[in-house]
Image (tube, rainbow, N blue to C red):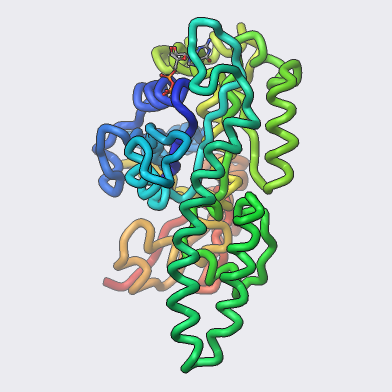
Length: 364
Ligand code: GDP
């Protein structure tokens, strides 16, 4: 899973991104991740892995990971090629969802590119650039489809839909505010429009506003209202505090957070919000060598889940020996679980659940 961090200059993106890379996971464990200077890989926190490590007496834990990509340089006029505009927009095209950092802290020492702190105006500025870029993509596509539709009338409904999306964009609304049928959804997905991507607005607040989850900061409330109008989520963070947390050891981190009246870090909140926004869950594999978590979309069937581990598992799938994490922890050992009949033999139509501990049987 790859998330792109965007926002105007001076809102706290680099501060957040540096915190992410510092908290970063060992990249050696994640060969699928692209290691570039603007990409940070973080482990998805999962308490269950530690418990399983005890049960299996395993050597190590390998959490699942997500990639954050720092997409700096987005400014007013980007879609017209201002700054390095179009290059940055193409980076956004590659990510699955967007973390849009919005400045909600006052600080006379930190200059705002537009002279004052106004999160809604900032959100609009960035969204407009993405909207302009999407309109360009649609105009090209509409032209092509119009030509093709002269010979193939079945394309007329596609053309209708393209025009409907373009009208929404021309109304300064993002594609993610639109409702689609399942068929339309599949079509829209392959258009890969920037404003159709799921968004989390990360409101960057001062340390004082953090404890009440931003409720004391009217700017955060405004962003919340706006986000709910476009099916987006809001996570309240303080980038500076994240930078401090990133330097601490795990137990120091807990103490530091509780001193601030917090349960989890902003980064952990962002990861969880992204997981739920994208409909993701984790299944687990366990053995004496390692306990490992794997990310899948909710609704993934057993063979395809196995395919995340190795394509051979998907190809030669026989069955998935499955136990719910809770069941395993309740009885304490795999043998006890088997005696109690808690280990299920699931076939190719089984939909994997969050927290399933699975051993795949397959032909090679
Ligand atoms: P970027 O241009 O969006 O990457 O912004 P930076 O991360 O470079 O931050 C711009 C300035 O704002 C830097 O001087 C940061 O130290 C400062 N800054 C970032 N986050 C916070 C914050 O939460 N509170 C305050 N007061 N300053 C911050």
